[in-house]
Figure 1 (cartoon, rainbow, N blue to C red):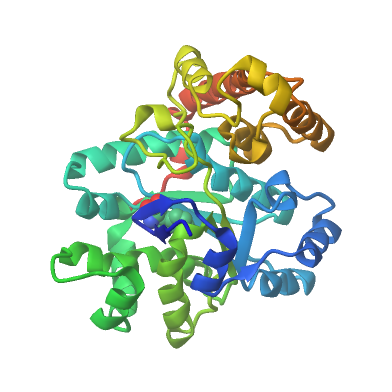
Figure 2: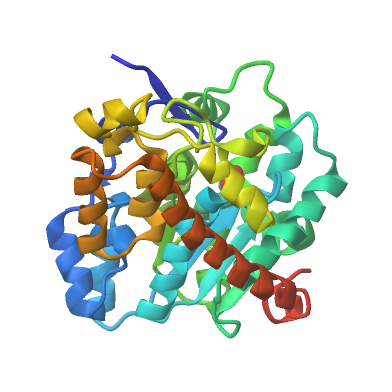
Length: 372
Ligand code: TRP
């Protein structure tokens, strides 16, 4: 059995997502839920249709509220430890779809405090700088400025702090240790931090002075934080936030390698040039054989191929085209080079458009950012 580990600060190994659902105690996204979304909104984003968002807590409850005519708000976030890569924007793309489909207000937290206390290398100035850089990517994705509030913890702390204290008072060190695996060497900033990550789940209710249901789209690794948030929510007079949780975009270097900012070739960053992006894709780990000859005979294995995963998860929405790619790969008709080029063109097209919007976002920060 291969070991894997998923915590908010560390993701390792070959993840068995079904096992993770069991370990974390969340619910799988099933076809019934997907049909419900379809009947409510008329469209289902491929990230949900393909169950990249595969897990939830109380998403059914959120839909029931919505069916009764009650609005809900969205909350998501980003830890600004570096430039944004495609794995980060996966949940944000889905969040944008949810905002459009359900007409939701969105609260977007940038945890410059968290990344400062977490990372030995980053200064406060660094994480503040990356809050700004990451905010440009968020804005570039096209969120509705009338309904979207982006804030960094350091800049919005005065508003958030008294609510964070309310959370902190209800969470013991022994709970934090059990949930996050803290020990005596953990710095006390990190121990307190989960209180700050809880607050935006309550901000819609606080700001509108009534109880508002909140849905948090995120990658599954954030679940431990929100177990705590859900634990304290009702004691503080709010609804428990609902969660909808995604898998991770795999590293370009292969299934057991982590995608991270420190390994530049493992991921495509939104600030990469088309040339850099192409090169990373052309060097990526595939499910192909070691020689063309062998591949013609045996075919490739899409299940372990990062190129296929990128197409499946983000870049090929057309099921027929995707199935054809899979068939040609497995039958040995297609060679990896062509598939790589196919993905590279899609990625470069996305990057060019994104980078234009990202540039334009520099003049639009005021439309989105809030601070004390
Ligand atoms: N802690 C998250 C990270 O390291 C950032 C974050 C804050 C977040 N609030 C969130 C992510 C809500 C998802 C949902 O990236």
